[in-house]
Image (cartoon, rainbow, N blue to C red; front, top):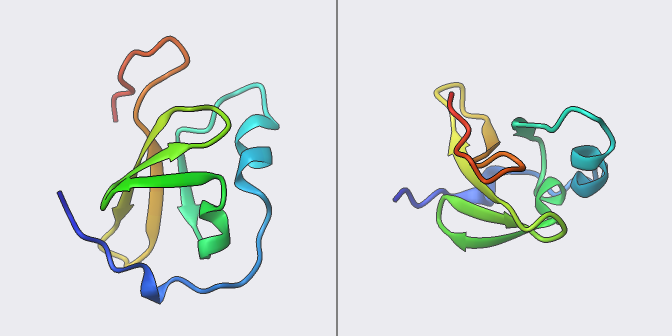
Length: 84
């Protein structure tokens, strides 16, 4: 497990992530995190794992080589792992 330092993410306000994730017919698999406000709809259960509060599904928190943070959904609506 990685211990990500989220102190570099800004506190600027942004759209509510729950609305973003459910507003489309096509589920979101990956999303760039621009601020800590983007994580309002999540509960952090490990250094690199989040649970979406409304949808109750697991997401991974990753820091890419470019220094940006991303969240990636780990399972689809049927409970099958999402591959790359």
